[in-house]
Length: 249
Figure 1 (cartoon, helix red, strand yellow):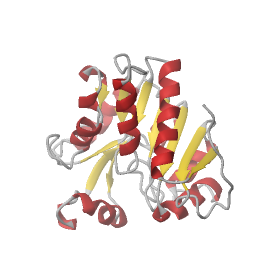
Figure 2 (cartoon, one colour):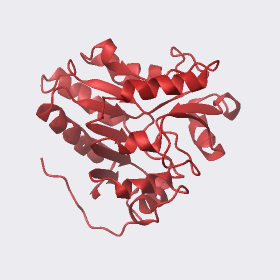
Figure 3 (tube, rainbow, N blue to C red):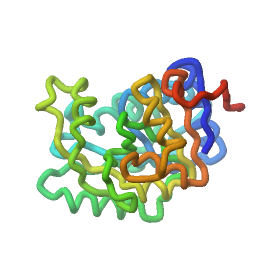
């Protein structure tokens, strides 16, 4: 596990984009795991700029998203399908058949999870991008999740729903369940890139890097992965007591 600290969100997002771009140049047919939420937005904007500047192409790239709310239509502005289209896919040359996001059919949730697992068989992610919740969740693997889980339906932790309510009109509108890659799916990736910004993530980052590996902090499992890079801003790194540490490209 390597941790790299940058001054602010803008600088860390540039470093994250440089990391992803380097992997895409090395392997044009990269299998890429994607995350949603506030943190990767600037990363995606930088990737779009690199595509527009003819530095990278997504034509051979295959993507797998971490998660999706259950019971929200893909065209709903709060769905992760909509998020990815708006913040990345519609701005690049990725082929629609290479985009994979969990289905969110509330009438057959278990079948949706099983089918997403089948899609990932033989499609080991070369690089999985992760954000992190205040409670240490990665994807929607909430505290108490079995660390050996594959794609499954999760009842969202109340803290997670409160955090995500800023994207909705009210807490009541936030779905209670989501479909998510399990910890086992995430750990099967060849490389993992975890991004975190802001003081609210500082405790989770500290526990991820230095806490005991347990299901109380699901992200702590990353200590056992052979190739994890964590990119944070100064606020998210505030409990790490580390000097500046910068990726070289």
